[in-house]
Amino acid sequence: MLPIVVINNYGQFNHLILRALRDLEIEAKMVSNSTAPEELLDMARGIILGGGPDIGKSGNSGKYLHLGLPVLGICLGLHVIALTNGGEVRKGEMGGYGSVSVEITQHNDLLLEYPPIISVWASHADEVRKMPEQGIRLAKSEICENEALVIQDKSIYGIQWHPEVSHTENGNLIFENFNRITIESL
Image 1 (cartoon, rainbow, N blue to C red):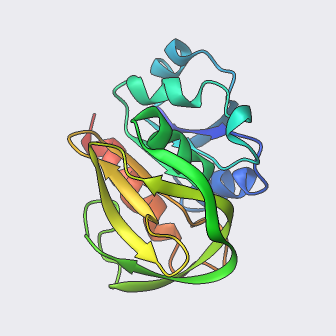
Image 2: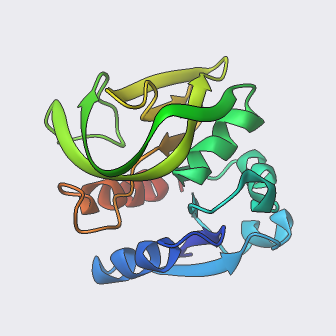
């Protein structure tokens, strides 16, 4: 079975994403965001768009959304998903760095088995201010109106918080659920 590929968008936590997957015994590898999209078709069963410092440094990340593979965007990865699908990303009124209480507004296959409220770790200044046309909001918080989304009729998911850090309540469940999604899509 092909691995899940983590796209390195040069964020501070990208290597923790890879480590979390490997600790869960989910086969994974990391590649640069300059990797040609067609190369991913031969090496991935799913893609995680990692975080990063700036949307201008997200390389080919937006192009990876058109490969037909399941995608999970984390932080900057969520922003790439929103912008590529017609949403808007702007500096948040509050931004977030630290613990945030997130309300899950709609459970789906990515958020399966989570309680209605979870404590997560945030590290961002920008946020999705306008949902993409086909986007469905899955979660919100007091500091960020769109904490998670799914693109309707596609296996494309995005979350604002960082499930890969120990401060996020049951963050590994995101990776386990995404792993299941990628296997079911085969």
